[in-house]
Amino acid sequence: MATKQQSLTPLIDIQSAAFAEQYERGVSWSMYGDEQGKGPVPANRDAKRGYRAGREFFFVEAEPHERRMTEGYLLERLRESVTEMAHWKDVDSTWFFSVGCLLGELSGHLFPMNGQERKVYLPQHQRLEQARKRHTTAQKPLRSAILQEA
Image 1 (cartoon, rainbow, N blue to C red):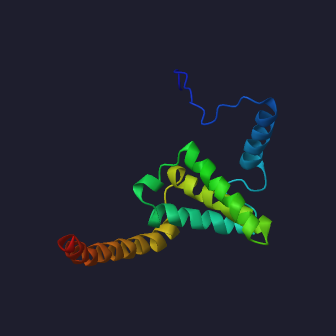
Image 2 (image 1 turned 90 degrees about the horizontal axis):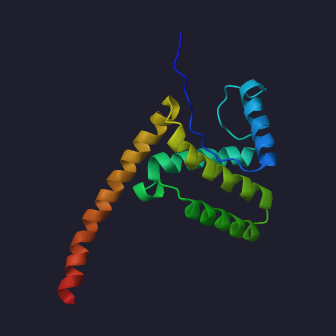
């Protein structure tokens, strides 16, 4: 029997009563509702595609500085999404895909790669690293030649 009282540090500092109510409903629904146990996958088709693309970017392509998402970076990405929405005719699809991408990238910090993702992402990551090395190696003689001319 546990005799020590445990505490958890909240991930969100909730200041609004309206937000708190909606958050509580969402937690309850995710724990006891129809989608219990299915994980944080969005319900919209475009959001699902974005979520998968965001996770793939996080695990395969993202540079270390791109994996640390600051509040400013997040807001800039949302601004970009709004700008893209103005460019594309299918505004809702673009928005859901963009938000799904952000959620997928953020989920990389919380949920490690699963077995299926590992089978796909690790070989992709290895190929990308090999291509980067080839590119860097090919650029060295070119840089040397440019520096010698200057």
